[in-house]
Length: 112
Image (cartoon, rainbow, N blue to C red; front, side, top):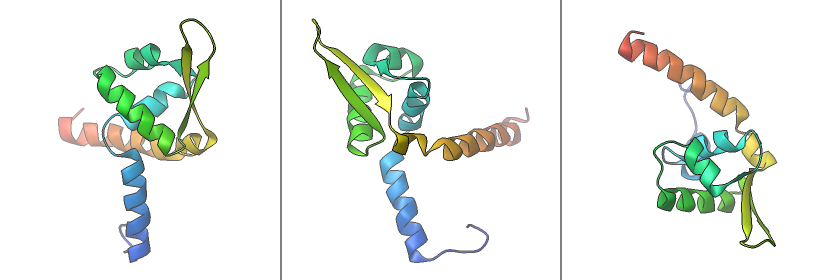
């Protein structure tokens, strides 16, 4: 796409994707949920460095974009679990490519 040029529609769809996934945490949260549903504190431990306030905000945004679901169970105290949706799982190839690009980038920048 970069080498062939693009049309304004390409830019619009890329902007939509970036708005849904913006920030440094959303893909890491989805990566955490890839192994199955998890509770808030488990996600917080998986995603090292994220504050509870930011995690809460990012979870709401991911849910709003249909990338995760939030299930509340009638227990005492209430149990809340988050799970990745099929729409969220559709990012598998994107995340895989980001992983490979990140490895290549690290090698180029750090010489490792």
